[in-house]
Length: 210
Ligand code: SF4
Image (cartoon, rainbow, N blue to C red; front, top):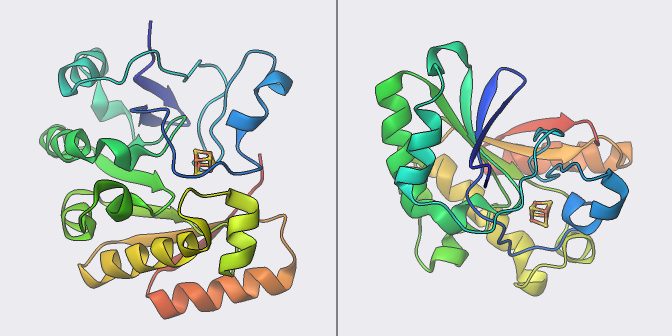
């Protein structure tokens, strides 16, 4: 059975797609054989290790809700859109699921590579800022060339600026935006990441490499 919903670290995770506009070198999608049949999703930073997140079929809204309805959501801190691909490919149902989460009284977060507006072919920042409590955008690198050499995006060297523009637009729209970078990069890059976050108007989260 496809795992559309799973729980970990006191959160509920919603897994909507395998599709991604990047092919990051550090992504567990590229290192599956080392994982002994278990799966992580690395741009998410906090996905689980006890679930097979690869989907045979992307879920409908009702598919996700039927799995969510099996949980007592009052027991969890956040509903997190995160999984084995880039969740904004399914922004249509994310908006609906955020309304569901609000009705249930649970906060929401998305872990995204920041390409959502490009993926959707329209500016989704206003809708994103309006519906999701925390927008966590993976920064991954501090310049366009380094980003592309690490993330191998279908958008080429534009991918870094696409991501930053999206983060900036979400901030302008009142979104709570966090840029994240892993702690294995040199200190100078962490400092540069902090400058970028400040310029964008976002917070910076330095997260542990899984
Ligand atoms: S953006 Fe995230 S899901 Fe996509 S390849 Fe990179 S780490 Fe993997």
